[in-house]
Length: 457
Image (cartoon, rainbow, N blue to C red; front, side):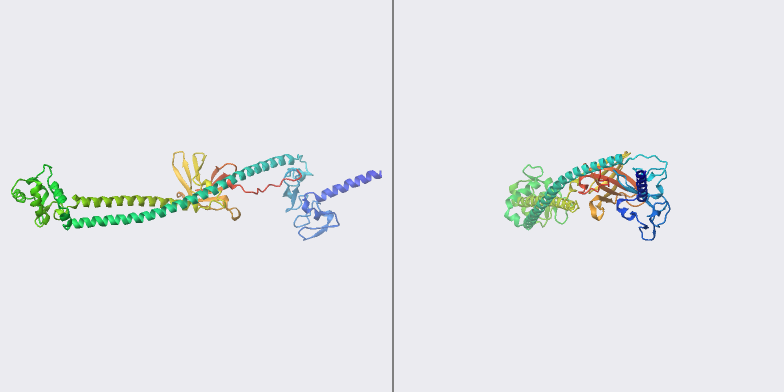
């Protein structure tokens, strides 16, 4: 009989103890050790210990009723062994609905709840393990992309140095070709002036006489006729009047035809003086017909040659300068601490959502194309906009096409960890303000904050 009394007493005290500590996390159990009195955790009041969990709220912070619904501000701790522990409002204790997966919140209700913590824990662990596998694979791929980014960065830097060297060489060539062109132009000018002054006509008389004779001999029959003189020779002081036949005959010495020999000793001298007549559309005597002089032609050809070479070098220099400027702009972009995002440059990623196709070209622009083919800019590359501790988790694309309500379209791109690089989703939470989820290995971080699953399992 005494043995049964002892067992009953032990059972009773066990029930009392479990009543006292129900709804308490292990870190708070030190406040609920069996003693004569209980101090409210906020220190506001001291009460007899038997008033703990007596279904009456004595403490303002609700700490005396962790296992009942007596206190409006109270919290009940779900142990949830095998899953994530968490708190629920005390008002949900014994309300007939199981809020804790271990059913500990319905210890004194009509609800018949099963303990689902094990299954939930399994799913949670499977999820975390999957996340960890994704993270491990993502970090492995990220390391590859970092190595590729470093190599690509070095290649771009080497390319820039080469282009700058080419530009320097072209600059030297430009100066040389400009000097040669100026010399050729100066030589051409000097040759023309010498011929116009008559000096060239004297030094190159034979070739000049022949050139002028051939210029006047339109039909190339070896003689100059009256009609050819009338067609090509005009008075110096009245260029608009056509010579009469008598005037033309007088210039030909009274004959209707003049050969080269007679021309050399008669009409050529008259034309050379340039005081009475000249060849039409020229600015003086035959010596001014510089376009027909072989020395002028040679000078002009040399000047044209140098001008052509100069133009080619100028075009090459301009092309190289544009390439340098474009490359410098690309290299000025922040591609991450290890240039891990550099591989995204010049890449574009598409996603179709209903009747629209969205295209994200990192570090360039975002567009939206309708099923009818109309394309709208949703923003151009602006900046990284992630928090200070994780700066490279968000991109902003600004100054897209104007919205009908005013203002420009903008897009915010959030980067998430994944084993593939792809555009995952596009939303428009507010008019002309777009958000995108962009998955890529380079967004993976070495530490993934794991959810709180009990270590016992």
